[in-house]
Length: 537
Image 1 (cartoon, one colour):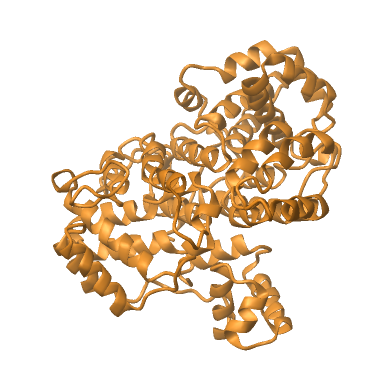
Image 2 (spheres, rainbow, N blue to C red):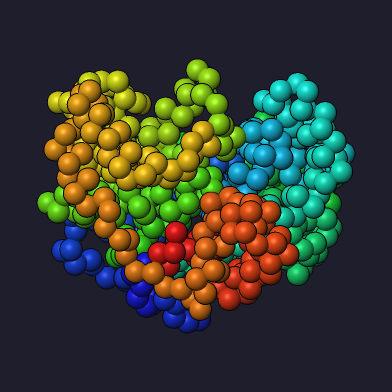
């Protein structure tokens, strides 16, 4: 990742946060170094777009995060928060679920495949009692699994659900902190994200923090998000009863919200929440200058959705940009973000070894559409959106999601499609191992011969396909530790690692602990983010 120092003016909402080596931001007009994106977006525009992706990953309608932000800022303002705290609330509300892909795969495994359905069911009961929580969640556990497996999944949820949730939330929060750091957000926002699932009564996760030890912004956002969800599914009466009865909330903030439900509901139901959120931007002059670093955050966020995807978007980006120097910037950026819409697909679908059902494929075929929906909100991304959204189209019209034909597919999109196909073929998938370069070459040329992929684009990709990837920063890891890290990032258990490397499970565990300590992480998700950002996958 290309890094430089961030300077944020205190008059724009934040002060005293020091300097961080993160995405290059600027308080002034951008330079002329542009290709794919025709203007540098504001930091708030990038963050707001990312919130749309987290909505999809949490099983919520797009703009739910935006509406939560509007409610949260309104509630914090009623509580007398100053400008700096309002800015913290703003970003914490938009990015509360930034780590939603970190535990998506494991969550899907634990409930029979559909992590998104589970999260949709959790939303109205997240701050409720344990009885309320189980009543809302148990009906979806194993709902998509074979009938014979469902009793086992439900029993496991009842016996181990709390500890599994703790592990998942810890991974979620750690990934959110890592990604927020790379976005250039200050430490106070990262601390708020780490406390995003703690509860006033101490029953939250992952650490059971209670009362005023939970950051104020996290307490505000918890109420705001639940109020938005409950108002949408049950109306003001349901919101009022939850605020009066639930012990998960800061009682003073809950009472303040209850007394001002009308104003908060008005904030949540603005006709255009996107524009309303941007009108509250605490840093309106802060621009994202290093677009590639920003899009690397989006890439790694999307690729966490499944261990099969680790490093995929970066690989496609590097390959596509090397294959077409005339559109290198466009393809580098489009490659990074082309699969952002994958977060809308249940992780169990991505992990399925058997052929997809018709209904599953209908969900899969829409992921380029969701990529377009998310990215189109960022100003100046028209060319980027067009190319990224066409990466599964075929010249003969047999692709998806539009069924576009050759005359509708520009050459950069043809290169991206070829690069994406090559990368996919040379990566392991649930139904097959990774193909050799020779086999992938034969497959790619066959797709060109059949009229699906552009032959010139295919040959351009093949000409650079075996080049070594970019820089690799080991971070003090030994060669064996690098081997273990890569296996872990791609979903291997410690037993799998032991079998693959012909070592004992105890030795595999020892290596894992040393790796985590050396790179400063506590979860597989954070280790994967580290490996991706340091060219180790």
